[in-house]
Every structure is written in structure tokens, then in C-alpha cells.
Image (cartoon, rainbow, N blue to C red; front, side):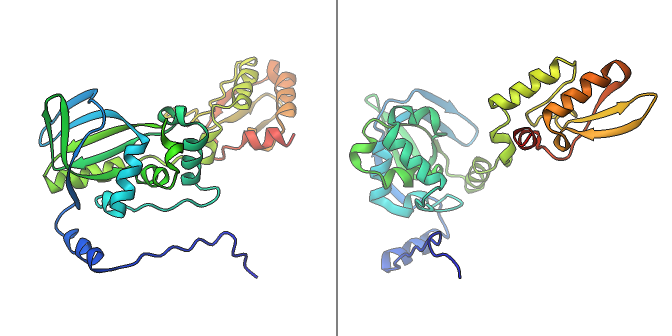
Length: 273
């Protein structure tokens, strides 16, 4: 029997307005075309070829209200819509941060990036015509599911880019949603245990690279050579205490060279020692 606890079910009603928006989305990226006054003063203006942009820090309540007012239309140019809040999900974590650590939301979150049809400045105020969130849809959606009092102290960094060139919009959307995959090992690469391992190996003049880099040393092998034997050991195959003992016993009689190591699991093996 399958457990139904982890199965998420969602639905969307399609009426005349939804069908019209689907039709419009064939020919335009921005479906929300209202004029909006930015809630805060712009802290940075950046011009470019075929585009210009502004950067500002906005209240979480502003993003929440936009998403609640316009729904999925506010992310019309995004590669995906809002995925909802499920227990243990990234979006659940975003919502919990807004509720429990609102003053730290700004530094924990990457913020949102939007495109617009135009940005104008009048009387020290900035007005945009049209808006679509092209990166940060999950942040916006999670804030929209939060209670109003939970987002009062939330601040979010916001980039807004003006351009009407569809080819440029496609690139902006694609590149803002492209990054190198974060592996589970990356999330622990700088923790205390990894740094302790690096210091322990350093005592024996052995380099232990605990983060993925362009260096050929980013995977660790110890190539052991001596007059008595020629063998290869990997950090992941020995408990760390046994490995360090092995090194300390043989180090006067062997040469250590580093070779690439295909499996990055010293943390698991060290903890199981």
C-alpha cells in the first residue's frame, strides 16, 4: 500500500479570464499591464543596451499583495508557476522564515527579479507599467500564503528590468533561472567537520580540499608509494582515525601525491568511524 501523506493535489479553475490570459500569453510575456508605483526609493539605477534596470529593497507585504491580487499572472514570463507550500519543501522554509525570522529574510533570500514594459521617474517616485516576476516566483507565492502580520517586518531585494525586446526577455528569463546544481555534499562542504578534517590533514602536509573548485585537487586520493608496496587508498574507504594513524606510521617512508577522487564522502565515513 502507498502512503497518501506525501501526495500533494492542486487544481486550477479555467474560466473566460483564464482562457483569455492563455491566449494573450502566446504573443506577450507580461500579462499584468497596470501602472504601479514602487513602494520604496530606488537605490541603484543601471543602464544597458536595449534595457535599463533599477534595484530597491521592498516590503514583503508589497510582494504579498501583488501576488494575491494578480495570482499566477504576476509570474507569466517565468519558466514555472508557484509550486505551493508542502511540508518540508523549500517554499515551506521560505514561509517559516517570514514568520519566525522576518528581520533576517533579506539576507537569507536571493530576492526577486522582474521585467516591465517601462520605468519612469516623476517627482522622486518611480512608476512601472506592467510587471512579471521572472525569478523568485516561489518567494512571492510563499509570502502570499503568509498572514499579513507575519510579513510586516519582511524586506526583499528586488531587481526590475525594463525591456521590450522579446529575444532579450527570453535570455534574461533563461539565464536568471540557470545555475550549477547544488549537490548535497556542497551543503556541508564548509561545516565544522570538514574544516576539522582539513586541519588534521594539514598537520601531515596533506591538502584536503573540502569544496568543489576548478582545482584538480577537489577530489582527494592519497597515492601511496614506498619501497615495500605500491597501493592506492581513498579517504572514503577508511575511518578518519585509522587513516591518520596509517599516515603517521608510514609518512617517514612514503611519498604522498594527490589524485582525483570520484566519490566525495569523507564526512559520512568519518561520522561512522
